[in-house]
Image 1 (cartoon, helix red, strand yellow):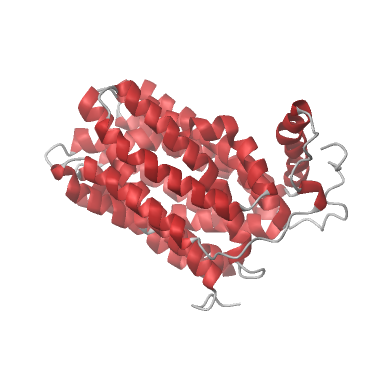
Image 2: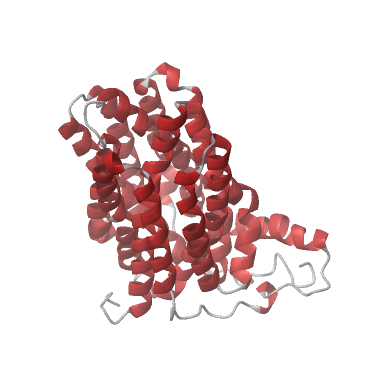
Length: 418
């Protein structure tokens, strides 16, 4: 099936993702600059960025279970609306602790919105069109990485408040775009809402033990999926380091260029936009080889960055890094969708995302602790954790095939056990 204008669910979801990310990229520029400029601490900036992800790390499994058993449309809209209420308060904060409390509140909205949108992919992308459909969605997510930071870089001289208010406005629009989105298929009887008489201990066991057990069984059965899952953790660790490395690199190497951090982030966005649009062309190749190659090349790009002292080549290298990141993301999403049953997709991402965020938080904290070692050391660490695991686990990426269907997909966790 070709993605045409008649595929309204795909267009609605893509538009919502685009709008939400467009505002979020402005806050991604504004928040670390707010902390660095007002409080002058790389470690505190790292802590603030990490706190924004903390709710998803702690409660992601709970949120994912709710999304899987309910209507992901409501959670996706609610997450966007919650962010629209919290983000505009950031520039009004008078103390660092207030900024950090607001970052946590923003993280709560993020915790609900992300797995819900991942679950809606099964509604928007038809079977057999996973690569092309996810390429369109990744492009919608990545194009704002170009537009948002570029606009943010131009607006920084006029004050950071405008960035946060713009994010709030776009979050509101993103929620409204999901109005009329088709409902996902009703969940199976064993994953419906929990009976009212179930004890708290049984509920917690279902969320943190039974779901993990079933997903672990399914993932380990598929060697390719297992390798991609493992490499996603190490990749997010490197991405966490880059979240502080990039503004520090911009401030230290290009202090004479106002808004350079925004321009560098826009370079990543440009590459990611191109990579998202071109990802479908890689469908003719073995997907494991594509996934491994793009991770290695992206790592090399980050390693080169501190060696560059001119804005043009630095931005060009980040364009290349963004392009390969987007291709790898499309492959990841498409393979997950084609290898997992729809009823498991929400729970997979609900458990994957908190773990990825935990590694991202760890990367942010590590970058804050290692800022004294210089940009080259941080860039080398980013390159190693992005490229190294993909090379070490290459046999699993190059040889794995899709597993045979599971004849009893829900046998591991019965309704009575829940």
